[in-house]
Amino acid sequence: MSGIRATRRRRQSVLRWVVVTLCMLFFAAPLAGMLDFTTKDAQGNRTGATWAKLVDVQGVSRDYPDLAAGFTASVGLAVLTVVVMLVLLVPTMTWVRLRLPGLSRTVEFLCLLPLTVPAIVLVVGLTPVYSWVTYFLGESTIWLGFAYVILVLPYAYRSLDVGLRAIDVKTLSEAARSLGAGWGTVMVRVVLPNLRTAVLSAAFLAVALTLGEFTIANLFSRTNLQVAMFLLGKSDAQVSVAVGLASLVFAFLVLFALSFVGGRSPSRKETS
Amino acid sequence: MSRGVAVQLTDLRRTYSGVNALDGLTLHLEPGELVALLGPSGCGKTTALRCLAGLEDPDSGRVEVGGKDLTRVPTNKRDMGMVFQAYSLFPHLTARQNVEFGLQLRKQGGEQRRRRSTEMLELVGLSAHVDKYAHQLSGGQQQRVALARALAIEPQVLLLDEPLSALDAKVRTQLRDEIRRIQLEVGTTTLFVTHDQEEALAIADRVGVMRSGRLLQLAAPQELYSRPTDDFVADFVGLTNRVMGTSHGTTAQVLGADVPLLPGSASEGPVTVLIRPEHLTVTQDAAGAAVVISSSFLGAQGRVVVSPGENLHQVLVQVPSAVVADFSPGDRVTVRPVGAPALAIAAG
View 1 (cartoon, chains in turn brown, blue):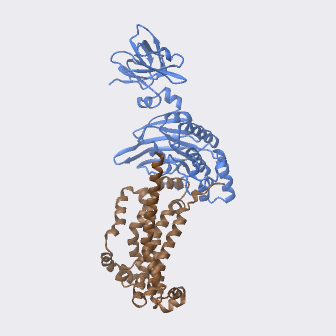
View 2 (cartoon, chains in turn brown, blue):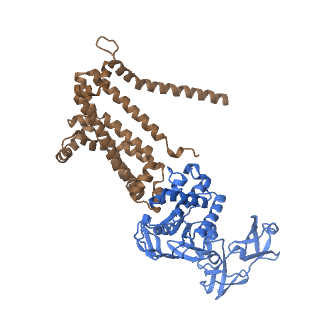
View 3 (spheres, helix red, strand yellow):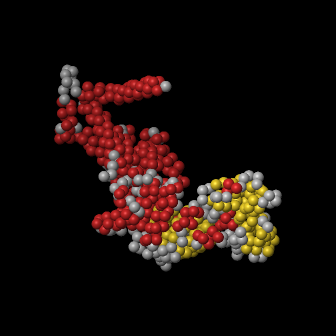
């Protein structure tokens, strides 16, 4: 019996590695193609000229001002989106769980709703809103962050919901309150530290989505990283593809870093 | 060490979706006293404790602590320590950091906090575990830290919401005794909520039995057990036989003998008398009307279940364990009350 089980385990292990390898090839092949394309000159010789251009920050600002502006705007958008999303969602979801559990279905429905709305429909709906935003706050790409908060709601909601389900928020907050903590202290010193992984996960998803967003920015005639890359592709395809590859690698690195940080819970430390 | 203050709950009412969780509860705790609220699930005991803690707002009524009206004061301003039924240690903090949490909020200095947390963790016997996180502690240890955390802030009142119910029997008994020792040592007025009568009787100065949001009886454990004023109290606290009889004012004729009746008993006519198993005797009697149904050895004591006769409910009799083997199913016996006062309610 144990021999049959061992054989079955070996087969499953082999199958697992085959699937993982195929998936990695599926993702790696286009990246390898992009790398290949950006490291060849017109004669087909290997060159690092395209990447050298990108590393020269001053040169990029001078030669590709739209790209520099798009990159700056996307970073700003990512920060604004993450901050607004967390400020909006974490207290709301915690409060609903603590005080208004009957509303949890409604909040979940509202947060998941953007998944069902195509970007073009969202833009049509947001256009009159943004005319007011422009009127009050001025014309800047950064205000697209409000629309992006709507886009990231479903993913952020799911991450935070998993985090909140993993802890007994009600008992922890009541314990903190009985010890003298106000609601602000409860959020900052009790809820957030125990939601760290969920918050980081939600933040990463928001960053990834913001850095990759094209449709809404383009339809609103704003220049973010993706729009700048699209425009650049018309005049210098190699630089455009190199920036695309760099942004993908950057996103992977952020994912890796956040997973690493999120996985290191202080509660797992060994005692002395 | 802190000394206790008086607590007064007056006519507290709280309704959830039309159900009265608290129906005019009035309760007074003397300074330094430990009062246990006992009752079945849904009787309102936890709601009463949460109203005192400020975690629930009563619909009406008044909460006073040390003579001050705290009815509308938020939880974090009430100066009460609380231990919950669920494990409530902050998972991202060590045992010491948990204990120091409330002290930090009170702006105590680092050295002072450290001294106090050391003192409290010593008090609950966890000096060797100060740097451990919740997941590295057993359930009993977690509840000990929670107790230390609640006491560290020197609360006016200590609230214990079924803190032992998640623990296994042996740890529960140990921690129960420790809670009592510590409570007597620090002298904090304490309200302890439980559904376990043994727990309540073992550690409380007084026990209150609740049902449907009302306090049926509040008395010292011994009095509650021996002189219940309500058939629900008699049934809920300890084991009780319901035996048919006839009341003649201050006594009742039951199983062929007179039993003195407790105040509040039904005074005339057919009654159901509530008699404890230890207040009955059973003897072998070939001519007896009663028949042994079963007998069981329980260590220090034994129990014999007897059918007293036709149309009568079976009764449980407590006997010394040495004689339990003398009774076998089918034996003819005689059952008699020993004459201890009992409560009688109108038969119906």
